[in-house]
Image 1 (cartoon, rainbow, N blue to C red):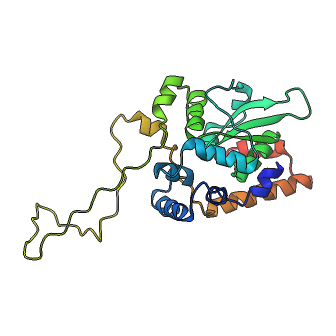
Image 2 (image 1 turned 45 degrees about the vertical axis):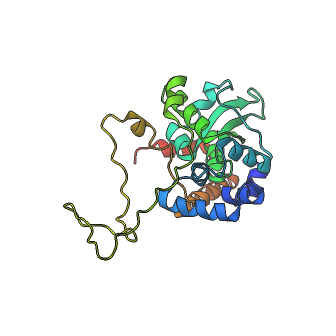
Image 3 (image 1 turned 180 degrees about the horizontal axis):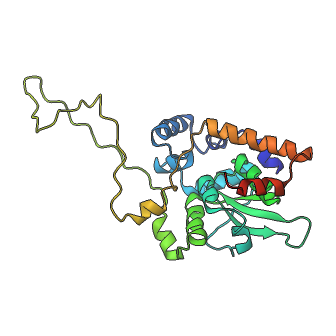
Length: 263
């Protein structure tokens, strides 16, 4: 996975900027919005109308010299699906769709990823499955729909209905002009909130019976463009495991057996 390891320290925003897909101003605006929403940067840029899902996938594939995969057309191999857990795929927005080279010494697990720069996820897959990973770029919505279909047993129609391509956000409503100083604003039972100091935004309450929100709460989970403390710990953890494995201090089977033990 030479390409991935060389590019592992880069981020999606940096690649998009280098390829001329976005401007510095657009990246800055996307990062500022991401800090508020905690969504992935790619989703944020799509919602802002900066680029489309397809454009994002194409830029990543071209930048990293990786192939792309259309999960709506590919024949999925169930033996590949069973190698990874659903929650892991949801957290990292990836989907294992095939095993290349079955019956040979050069088997590879083919994985569709919306973020092929997620080296931590690739390291974990390779360690726990014992197979090298061949990443393919796919769109956010295709990965999510595949997870619903093959892990949560949703039909193709149900998955398509539940997974919506992030749409550009509507332009903000104009702020009404303040009332003249000689007019007192009308108060109807509540204190008036200054536009300059609004109350913190509250997450909209989930409607009763909202199965979509329940099933797809992971879809717009966020990961800041800057590396988080959890990501740093993950990266160090898997680096340590690789060193221990090379020195013969731990085997994959020992690791998996310990992982399954009751705490």
